[in-house]
Image (cartoon, rainbow, N blue to C red; front, side, top):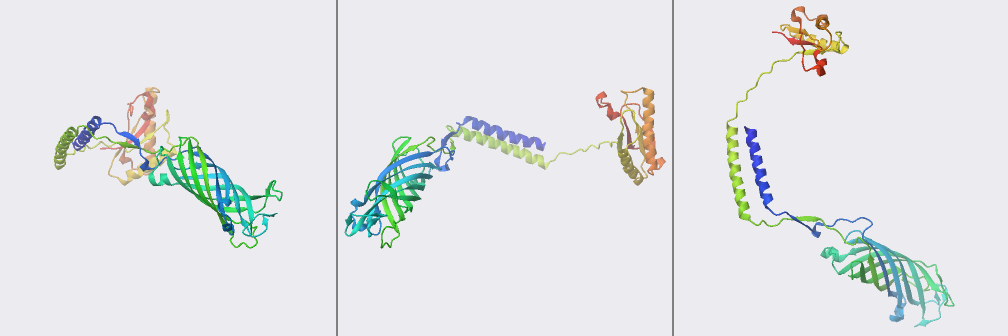
Length: 400
């Protein structure tokens, strides 16, 4: 009864809430960037950038030369990848020209002739690889939006430059063998003109090792302030996916739902009361005593009545039980199936089997007074010819 009441209580709850759910509208799913972003595959979110502009070099003696006279061109090409809407990397080849002043009469290994305030003009071309780590400040602070036009991106990186200068005849460039290491930091102001193309203004500062062409140089580092206009092509896939979040609509008829809930609560209270009453008056448990089965059964192959070593081990254990209970009497019954062999042969087989078991128990010390031997002409299990092997046996049971 307790099980029935519990099951009824569960079914009532399931039916009530199922009907409530069926009457409500289905939840809608929307992309929610506040839950984070789904990372794209490695092949996605690559870009190519080409830039050109100029910069101004600041070394130990450059203040003696006009600022506009130190403006020099530069450019670069980059290949990069955004690993998230906020973090990215780019690798490129950069070229920049440097104009400054030296206190020695050599522009590298080439004699300089032009002077400014007693200092000699110098000009170098720097070419080399650069590497930057990028941080999209707009997506970081304001959240990612695919349709956003403006993005501010901060980056920092390193570069290595090979220095080239003009020969004395000013006809060609050659390697000065004065390589430069530079650290760089910059801000990219990017404007998306389409889904694939962005235009940007890149403002950068390079902090680099100074050239070794000045005789009295004491400042081993120099700076270069640069500004570049750039165009960037964004390869597919360009956007970032966000998790789908279910949005549950407001129910149209709250009063009807409330009434159904109140009715369900009433039925639940009634079932709880019935369950409490059933627990207070438990049903009488009637235990039926099962009739005891045989103490043991020895099975035989067809036409066999000899005992195996395993059978002897079983009979030894049975003998120990019998000797430990001398006041109990045991009945040995021989069986043979009625599906194979003649009746005369099966009668003899039943007697041979039961007598063989009895003799072995006597050898193990069981008194003959504790054992009665009989045979049964029927089938032990009588489940048909398919299970005939179960009818070839000797059963050992407690007697009356």
